Image 1: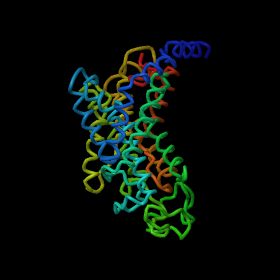
Image 2: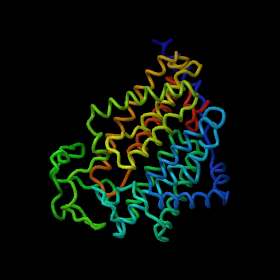
Image 3: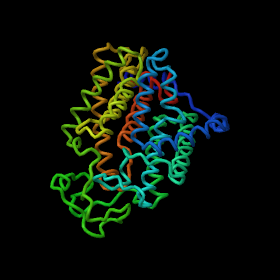
Image 4: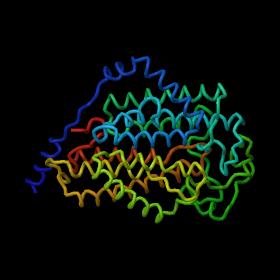
Length: 369
């Protein structure tokens, strides 16, 4: 037992964690171009709508994987950068939708509260674009701070979630949401299946929609919320992403393709699954598992690494579903379940690196050694 404990301690000591500094943050944020780019990217997300902007990210990342050496293609940098990155364009688009719904200027015909409609283009109203620009700059500043401090998580995904909670606070929405009396707690989706509606006065009515016109529970994906369905798609999406990573060497290829396929969802094709929170951790874990080193799960065969990646795809799917049941289904605006799942799974990966289970966090700040 003493020998095993010593070996475990030795593995922890082998972990290469490179912390950042506030000097790095200040240097990054001293560049005026990055602020202007983020303002433009936020306005872009508001004008097009959050989901169309994110789909654009998906195409950039997918093309970018093949535009250079593995994950170093310029399109990947553009897709995750201060103009088109989800923390800027997507998050700002979600904030702009929340603002427009509060102002009553967004009658999109969405089945849920209009503040949740991330598919709807908001056009060129100056006030809406200004909201997008402001949230775009916030997203850039927070992401750069997390990245340059090397906080061991996914800085983009964390920022998307933080931005969503911020827009709920700024525009006067409930931070968590209000659980209907017809639901047995946050995790109960059965009122949706029974097509039950809220009672008058149960929630604040705005955006042109009365409380009694809203479903008592509004699941993020009406065709993909049952645990067995979510787990199954998560497993297979994770396996597919790992195999694509095996072929390309990029942890981002699965994410890019997953994001790009949401074009069909935005066009109104039913039952299109949302899978980027399954494919990104799977691609990352695949590379972590095949990386050489002294960690417990280092230098594995491709087959074993693909299998482990599939399990992380499943885990990402379940975390996303749990998050949507608490923060989306009972709320008024879009708080992104995939982003929450991604930053949680990648924080977990960093924890496993620290414990000596994996040798590297691949691309996660601070754990790339």
